[in-house]
Image (cartoon, rainbow, N blue to C red; front, side, top):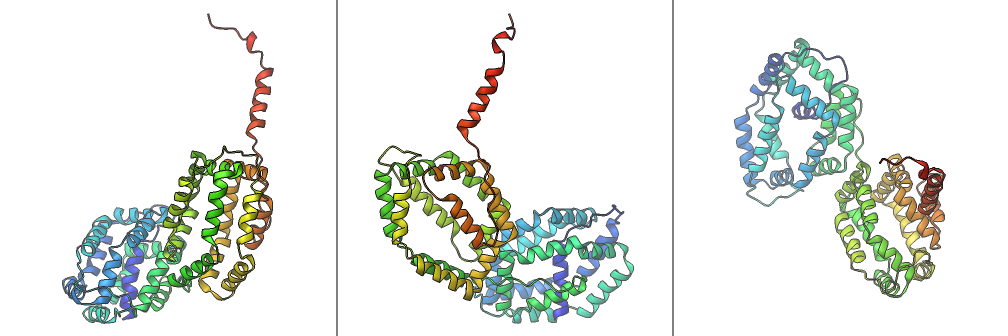
Length: 434
């Protein structure tokens, strides 16, 4: 049974693996397509589809799989993987070898989208009855014998194997298996009694890749619970009441609100959220049950709904409002809870590791050096916020060393420099066109 799953998984890997960067060799369209059709011809597809139809109508486990395969989460994962440059190259490789990839993907998607479960889905129900029924009708010995023959005697099939088994192929599969949504799929299938670890181990052995990467376990419920526990310690109603009071009467807070409602701030946010590392991290949080979009929308709603009652003053101090908020936060309890999560919650530990990674540091470093972010640091420092101290503490917490030194960009100084240069130019002596 496991060998069949390995073979099917190998076919699946084939449609997501990259080409090797090597001199182009001639591929016989007829030979590789013929190899593919010979293998497919051994599969009793009509009988398999009949079993699928039966289980879609009556099996809660299969209904759960179909429901997931029709979801935005699955389609988003497929789109993300197929858009990777190495995957695009490999699809071109197959198309050039006569394998109608787009047609195959479209046919499979049509089967999935057309399936209508006849029972409520149950992600905890076993897929074993369905899988065992399918495996029982597949001529496994004949299939493996044919694949082995192709590996021995078909140059084009050998080239296909070499392409998938390449370092680029392994790197892409490793990367995909570590994507949060792919980790979630592995967890779901394992819970449904699919031997995911065994299949992956056999696939990696078949391609000579060694041991598969260990998927980082993310429990949606646990990480969301950690998040809610931490938030529960914050006196949010009291903090919002202080904010309302200062928005109405504090020129410094009015200046912050005015800036947060500006195109400059919204442009910075959009630019940061569009960066690939930020997109991946947001996906990670969403897949872990943290409603990121809802949180961003709620914060934006608070900001956009604030109406300052005084004129903004970017030189006034923010210390009164900050001190008032800090005074009501149970800091010791908050730090104790975070420390407890770091010691005892695998999901919170994974979150910390993800943020503390080299990619996480690189993103924060990059953002802090962006001109608008530098401008924000200057504004807050002028308003008596210890920006340097806060950044130093954050970098120390994540083990990043010292924060980058922000390149100072003074709008007024740059204008002065420009005017000084212009003043040296003999503009009056430049001949005018008559």
